[in-house]
Image (cartoon, rainbow, N blue to C red; front, top):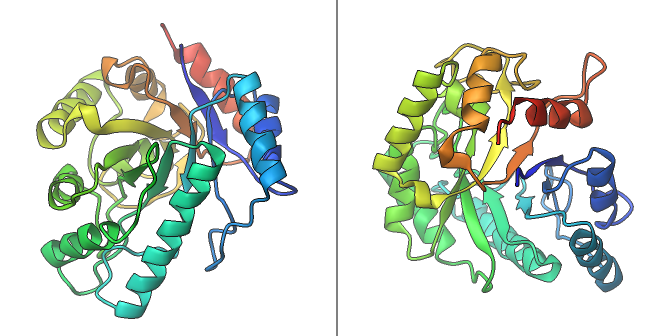
Length: 277
């Protein structure tokens, strides 16, 4: 069964994210546990958590993913930012445990002068300071690779997985991969990209996909999402990706824009039109 959904809001209570997902006709999804632009603790009450779990179960919506704050930087060499990042990660995995959400998704962040190897070392050791509950897995998200941000190459993703004692997995973002230089615009490019991912990281580590088209050319390191099939990955590439064996049973989560009269419901319908399963 195709699992396709969107990033939905917890405004007014985390259980509202399920209702919003159902409005879009989605059957999996992603949330922030709080505003992603500030250091803030999740504030999820017991009643709304119970309602979230019940609504998700009753409507077969899942799996869900919590996306961490944008301020988290696991690669940083700065002690204060490192401690804030570890503390934030701990609260996110605890929130996931409370909500029966199996995944917490995080960007590695930027090494800001520590170098690639130093940044990967920092990220792995930071994650090892997080007490991850049973049933929750941290996913490292692929990045567009601008500046000193890490995670833009499969080798960097594998580097963290190899260094870290935690059982980590990966969330691939199609727009980020395309921006980082992995050409997903043709069936051949999609095949080659998945073959390289399997060789370097391992397809067994692919647990989630952020399904976004790109407004910018392949290899530009520019991260700006487009509607499915309407960006520079395009219809041919998106069709090939959605129907590839590598993502069979992998949840697809949209982070597409709301513009030109189109929102998540349009994109979810579009993905289902492309899907040949």
